[in-house]
Image (cartoon, rainbow, N blue to C red; front, side, top):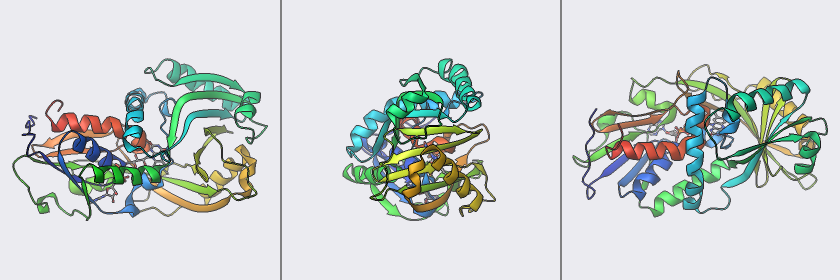
Length: 354
Ligand SMILES: Cc1cc2nc3c(=O)[nH]c(=O)nc-3n(C[C@H](O)[C@H](O)[C@H](O)COP(=O)(O)OP(=O)(O)OC[C@H]3O[C@@H](n4cnc5c(N)ncnc54)[C@H](O)[C@@H]3O)c2cc1C
């Protein structure tokens, strides 16, 4: 489908959705000279608000998902420039990740990923080093002495997703973007500022109601927030991604604690955001097994979010008519993919890519 090349003096963009995708796209477009406004329905429905904040490229490498891994690797390369643009030292919480195993079988699983995907997949900027149990304790002394080994992914970052949203909102404001609290019920209700106006639909799961051809399903996930007390060991300095008796659990550092995540299963519907006791119990038990000192942390939040997923696991970033572009379906990787998607959206808006 042909897209118009817009007159730079009159290019206006309305972004529907103020999650990580909508705000990052708004910032990239504003920096390229577009006049941008964002309409957003609020925090309650926002996957970006509950997320863990891992910028996983190597860590999200799963056999059969090479195309998704390639997108993550490409987007990870853009993250340092985005972090610099945001200019908020509280956003990035770790620059390396540890993949750790609790048993020989778990270690074999990590080796399989390393051989099959990490070594043979798309080239990543991150470097992967095998580590022993002893190395784990040198790097993170408070992790369990029962961990047998794993890998260190140097350059695999994490961010504080809530600080990220705050920093994005502050930065788009200084770039002249207006963020308006509003639920868009129909695109025909949007006022049309002129022939060169464009709409970006970046409403996460909410996109299906606004553009019915976009099919998404919600993958629910429980996730916990723990804060250290004065009796606690400090939070880890790395993202810790553990394989524990066949299950996965991750610990993502925050300034004052950790985020522990995350379960993943089909939700009952588009509003099923109440955490289940079983998911919370498993995450807590596994996290404490990995870092026993978490026992003295306070459990400050148990939440569940809905990942906006597509059938093929790849995000939908495409023009759907002469005035409308869609960017949604980022599944479990929306934070890592945000700068890559923002570049693709800008190319589509400017007619460089369809
Ligand atoms: C438990 C969990 C852990 C995760 N961990 C990670 C991780 O570690 N790393 C990672 O990269 N990703 C992670 N994700 C995935 C990531 O959170 C999502 O892919 C990402 O947030 C999607 O961003 P989005 O902006 O498309 O959607 P959302 O964040 O859901 O934002 C959509 C926005 O659109 C607004 N909206 C909806 N409908 C309308 C409407 N009609 N009008 C106006 N506004 C509307 C909503 O209010 C919301 O603010 C995780 C997700 C979950 C649930």
